[in-house]
Image (cartoon, rainbow, N blue to C red; front, top):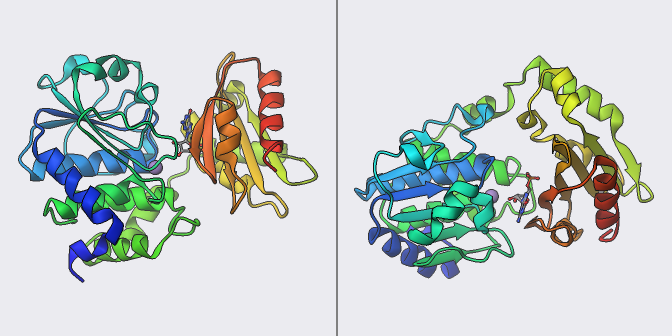
Length: 332
Ligand code: 5GP
Ligand code: MN
């Protein structure tokens, strides 16, 4: 199979258009959403490889840095966490896995109007923040999938750091090639990455088998706390700041926990509420099939995908729990 044949018919034109748009850019800042997950980080790293391959000057940016559990990914350069200390003044931005300026972090959100923008994302409801061009494709399993197609269109081989970064994005957003978004196209792309030398087993090992005792203690405590609501169709759990502190865990240690809640038989939606600061609570929702938790998140100012969504509630813990449970129960 030729690499271009990996791109689904309908996406060949936008992928080529994006490659053309990238060729016109230089001095680029590449960024994804704050608190990056594997798809955001993988997409940013892959785009760095792509732009370097096109001979462009570029920097990687993440206001919140790289979470320690993703620290194993080899990056094509330094990940900058401040616009004040960049090696050059960017004139263009490539924005990935993010559809709203505020999710880039306040610093880049403020600088955005002065930058020529290209936005590639797969979130339903993404506005398209790019001033030059946008590719918003909610049917894509991961933003990394779209970035891979742009790289192919640009004639860049999907190997080395680029291949690893793309595989991390695919693995993260498909739950290890298991979620409903794992299309044949995703599997063909993954097979191509493996063909080009990407070690998926090693990636899974680095990603999965890295738990601290703090994380293990936290999960043990929270598993005991899960409540079954809405006639057993909703699993709910709330995490307080002092849970993290007393277990010696960080908020990143919660990554993956909400998926465990969904494992309960009969549960159609899982809701995890995490206190980030007094009066500030981040929520994560997961579902399966037709159950649309994005709709629930959207009523609370959040967003995401039908089966994986999130947002932030600015209110007291008890009120946040009640508000979240009510919103999710309404879509069940
Ligand atoms: P997670 O629960 O893993 O943080 O996020 C699940 C999904 O919801 C991801 O696709 C993420 O981008 C999206 N999401 C999480 N928080 C927000 C938010 O505050 N706003 C929007 N629009 N999407 C979010
Ligand atoms: Mn994503």
